[in-house]
Amino acid sequence: MNAPLLLDAEAIRANPGKSDRAIAEEIGVARATVQRAREEVAHHEPPAQRVGRDGKSYPSTQPMKHAAPQRGKDATRERVLEDMCRDYAGWWHDGILQKADAVDCVQRHAELWGTVVELGQDTVQAAMAEAFTPAPALPSDYAARLVRDFELADPRDRWRWTGEAPPLAPAAEPVKERPYRTPQATVDAFFYVVRNETPARLTAWLNDHPRDAAYLHKIWKDRHAAQ
Image (cartoon, rainbow, N blue to C red; front, side, top):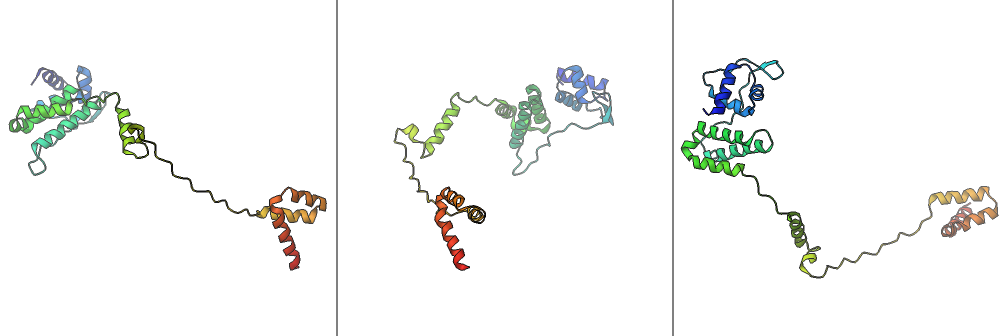
């Protein structure tokens, strides 16, 4: 057991009822480091209750572990190792674990599962290196390149980069104007003026509605002819 784990193990033996998080804050290490140290204390069984940072007692829980790899067509040790590396690298990127703690956890699992023996430490190190290596930085003109590629793939915009003439805009279809129809409200207003106003007022009203005058005169004649 390395020196940090020895320190954590002693802290666990001194305070077996404390939670991993409480011990980690007390001695200044990551919670995952305390969890590994608790696993190392093989002869120590976790108590039924643990004391949290708030001083209250809570049921003891075992730390979550990755399941050991299962042999089979789709569950090779290499694939399980790669998946575990990606998981721990994701927790590091999310700020849940420190990078050193995440790498130590992967190494410890690989040793416990026999992956180091079967695949070799070089393979384990290569898998960890691939998962924990930061993604390369994007070039400064990355956005401009995307715009250029999109426009080159679009016949409507590729002329911006190729030097060819812009495509002609399609001719707009002529707008068909709907024939005018006198609104029913205007018809009602006309008959109101006929019944209630003077001939002079009717003449002035029809002058204000030149588009409707012929139609209104027609329906007036048709109504009187029917009577």
